[in-house]
Image (cartoon, rainbow, N blue to C red):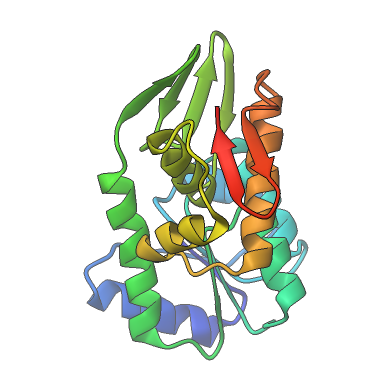
Length: 216
């Protein structure tokens, strides 16, 4: 789903996606945009920041609280603050206008590829982690992870009880075509910890100062 208020840009995006073999639709009425998007339930959202009625970053935050739909921010606002805010609110990627169509398609393809190749289910203590869905369950409690959070947790789980450096995590994210910077990694780690804390595992990821992180 393309959520973009500029008619020319959204029609260009629709044509690009259709020509690449994707089924795409556009949102052209932004009143109650959140509910319309959730009702449509797309596999991925291209979301602009500057929208009528609601800021795109706020809309991102609201959607992320209810659904783990992959979201790529497509915006002309290329400041580091916007990128960090978008990532902290749960965006899976951030690309600026004028965008390179080939790069945008590669980013979209990478997200779908990663969703297919993440392992299915991992058990950690009394948690059940559904990697493809980005969901952690503990009894009747459930938390939803973004794709970046899931990649980080998956890497820590695969290297449990070993110190993992920030460079390793950055490399793994890059290998999954998630081109985040150092600040965004810090935001993602903090957000992942908060979600684990909400189900009783706030101390699961330890920081080893100057070295990295360890999942115990």
